[in-house]
Amino acid sequence: MTAKPVLTPGTDHPITLVPTPGKVVVTFAGQVIAQTTAALTLQESTYPAVQYIPREDVDLAALERTDATTYCPYKGDAGYFSIRVGGKLAEDAVWTYETPHEAVAQIKDYVSFYPNRVDSIEVLPAD
Image (cartoon, rainbow, N blue to C red; front, side, top):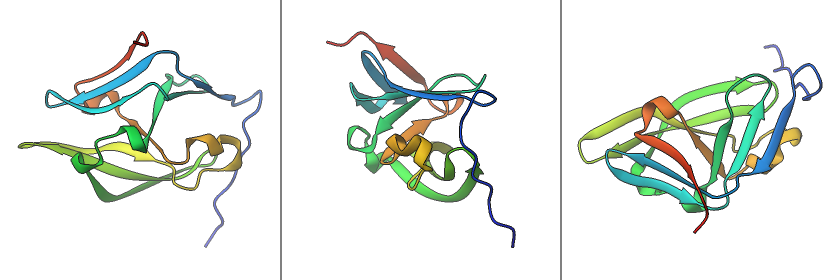
């Protein structure tokens, strides 16, 4: 089996990771799934910025681990969760890097949500 490549962010593929100013609120099926003032904004190359939310600020009871996995040479192996609220299900709507590569080590113990699989991801002014 071929080893997975590990790439370091640089000028050809920059990754920035900064604290998100304000509060991030994620809703699904009309319920708040995550709410935090400790989110991180990850900007990777030309992709849209993504909010990473500490697990401690997520309603983990609404998440169900799935068998899905992906690999990013810049971040590492990602695992996935579906969200179930009432009778509604959003499959593989949440991802996490439990052992991220060193360049993005800050996202360990954080999760992120696909915007098209939840009702909303809002960045609001801090209280």
